[in-house]
Length: 88
Image (cartoon, rainbow, N blue to C red):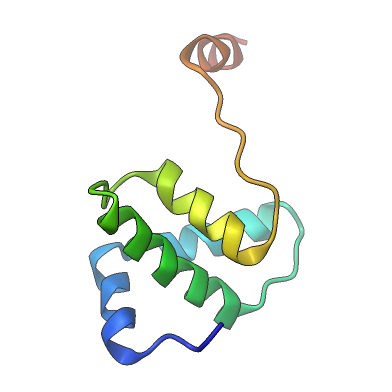
């Protein structure tokens, strides 16, 4: 994959929490991170979400990030599971 160009990096300005969030997730999972690869994946994720008409959809963004980084996709909990987790 080519390095992101400057105009694509501007899309990160519209979602300034994405990169820190991805870095924190990697840290919590004790994974080493290739910052350039994560940055490229974040740019691609924001573009994909925007193209699908869902620019603020974290599921679309994380699906694209996972695809670009060649890691398993996120497993989303449903509302019942979250309620059970939060009530304990």
